[in-house]
Image (cartoon, rainbow, N blue to C red; front, side, top):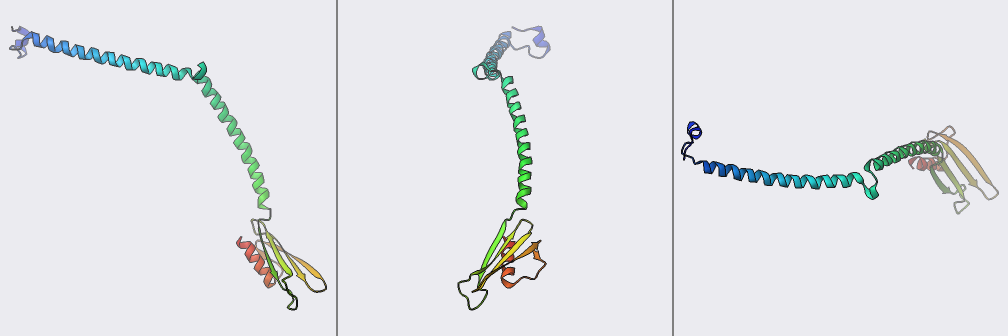
Length: 169
């Protein structure tokens, strides 16, 4: 059974039944795909509504506003603590952080290394040296100021050793 239209496009030998069958199957496939897409869309919509509703019927928007408020509070606390830490760091910088002690015999007739030198320095190697010289009759204590790891007064061997150990940390 031929058609003038089919003959005009070069398909005059093709039966209309097969064309209708092809389009019918194509229509059923499209209908199945539409139903599947609709099903997926419905599940996606349900998931979206559950997400937007949140826990205990609390809206997502309210939760996000609360989170942003919390973040702003945390920023304020962080800035406040940063300022406090800077003050603490400035104070710690000037505290004595490096020290050393050297025990020695000031006089050869004395034993037991009763004399000692203590070096106390801050982060910038500023501080002092205390030298306690013990003899049989008395004890003498000397103090020397240290600026940038140097003394303006000549240091003895033990004092220089204590200063070098303290500067090295």
